[in-house]
Length: 153
Image (cartoon, rainbow, N blue to C red; front, side):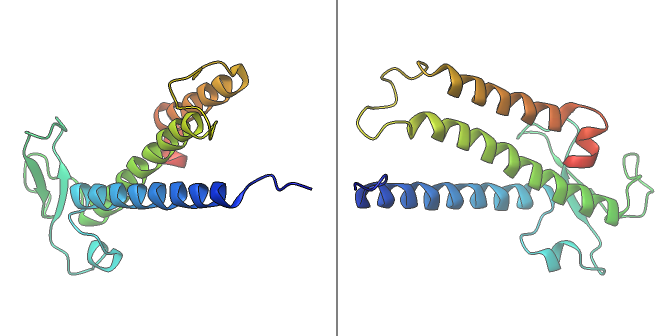
């Protein structure tokens, strides 16, 4: 009998998994820094914490970051540190989740053949195209449908 996955295929599968894991974890850490201003959970949920960094309403890289001190005295400071911390962690997890879904969908196209490059007959498998389209629809529903997006992400 012949094995379904040969040793060189295993190496490729493991390498792809390690690269994907490293990239998604790096994205999560960058998102934690961008939204929570810290990397470690103890630093994020520390009770003595007096500020929380979040992106401003514009969300563009050039827009300034807003610091909330928890006093509720500023024009945009109606959140407490607890709310800011909770939402910043949720936002970072959402960024990592979206990145993971996109990466897995792209990986599905690149991993479909060990012999042919990705640009050869990329969209010839209708079942895979439907599966990836379904995954993308589910991703956007989980992010944008009111009620579901609040409960899931």
